[in-house]
Length: 333
Ligand code: SAM
Ligand code: DTB
Ligand code: SF4
Image (cartoon, rainbow, N blue to C red; front, top):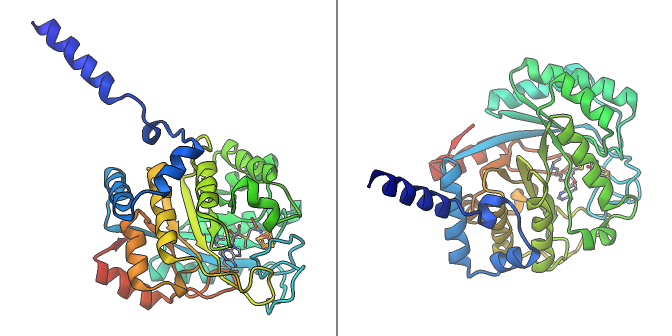
């Protein structure tokens, strides 16, 4: 009897553990498209259910951004005000001093951020850039903050140097689906993005990778971007979903705005396909109503960029975000 019960239990365990796309992390393009096309309420319910299995649904992580080296970038990303290919109001500057970075990180910490993310408008850092950035990482870590960098393409050796300095996360976005990449950027190819992510992963640094929506893409193309991210092996620990910030002078200025409910769908599919990742409601929040942001949290977003500036464009200020989070009963980490 006992043996029979044990056997039944084993069969039951095997049955409940049968891998599904959710647990196995393998998603076909068709399956992701099916998800994103679900009736809105079904999609949000599914996302919220998965969110609750892995996270406290009333907790959001706060990351603060700082542009440590602004503008003058040789790349031609059609969305970016920092590209030297376009006439924008962004002025190119040299890398910031260590002390100024320390003060900015201190302010972020005082305001409640747990992660400090330093961005540079480079195609890829040079050896001497890496030396400088390792100093900056050490300063951020000394303050007890998590350190994140986004510096462009990274060699295996540079990734290791950053890891040794204490880097926790490296941000490098896939940005679009593979098929759309050359419509947005011509100065590099998708495979180079994937190679950098491999170098980051192999150095033992957490991967932060996401993309931009609202660049005139179709829903199917948004699904294709999420499909790529979800099938990275393993998928990223952190997934920023940016809504295009339209900047005058860039080729994408004047693009038809994305329906906010499509943005919410994108967040929900990111949550479902990458259940344990931090999904970050990233650029574009300044133009988003509180109701849409609340829907994004409902759909599984559990991180935001926090502080009145992203890299070169605006973001809601500390007080406004604190008021929203309080209104929603959300705790921060
Ligand atoms: N130069 C490095 C690179 O491209 O990887 C790091 C900095 S770059 C500014 C980091 C990310 O910012 C881009 O991959 C893109 O996702 C996002 N980004 C840049 N301009 C944006 C915009 N106007 N709206 C939304 N996201 C933007
Ligand atoms: C990410 O995915 N979004 C951030 C961060 N990673 C580096 C950058 C958003 C930039 C928005 C345009 C700007 O402020 O220049
Ligand atoms: Fe340069 Fe990064 Fe802007 Fe592209 S997104 S132009 S690589 S700073």
